[in-house]
Amino acid sequence: KSQPGRKQWRANLLLVGEAGVGKTSLLRALQGESFKVQEEAMPSTAMSTWLLKPPNQTKVTLHLKTWDFGSPVSYHLAHQLGLIHRAVVLLVWNAGGGYETGQLYSWLNLIQARSPHAIVLLVATHSDECEVIVLPLADLKRKYPQLVGSYKVSNKTGNGIEMVKQVIAEEAAKLPFMGEIWPSHWLAATNVIGDTANPYLTFQQLQAVMAS
Image 1 (cartoon, one colour):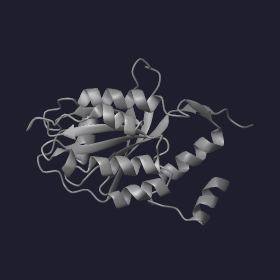
Image 2: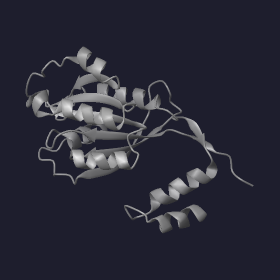
Image 3: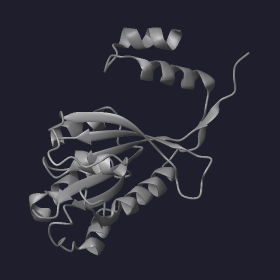
Image 4: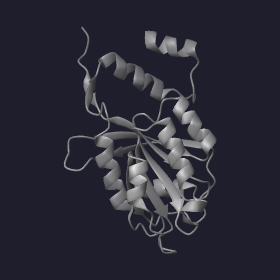
């Protein structure tokens, strides 16, 4: 007898931006981890899982698969893997370098071209060290409708982190298919694949998993 399905609250959280702007430190701060003065350079793509409670929904837990991308090249891979169609994207830039140095328009154009329905948040880091430049947010929202807002944070002091965390939870909970019922065999396959030690599976290995 087949088991009933269960509601699932799964989505992707992508952190993109130029190298050295504080993406990894931002993710650590959002997850409640301590700040490291000298954060080790991450590989081109770092993955983890973040469990997050959406506002006013104590019985729901969001399972966010986080992807820390180090370059536009690795972000292109995200599109090929279908990661950015159900995702919240944090476009991170260093307030001290300005949005021109952060290549915000280039990144926004890339996101819009690859996935115009992804939710985008602009996050300026290092707000404790300098004044954050005011962005032409109204114009940006007209050009990039998926843009929710602009936020400033300090990964070091934690200023602004809770606000960004709250917005992520709110926007992720509204993504398509969140809260829908997954059949039991989908859940079983997802759990088996997630428990594998290998970072990837061949098609034959995937077939074996799906048949088990």
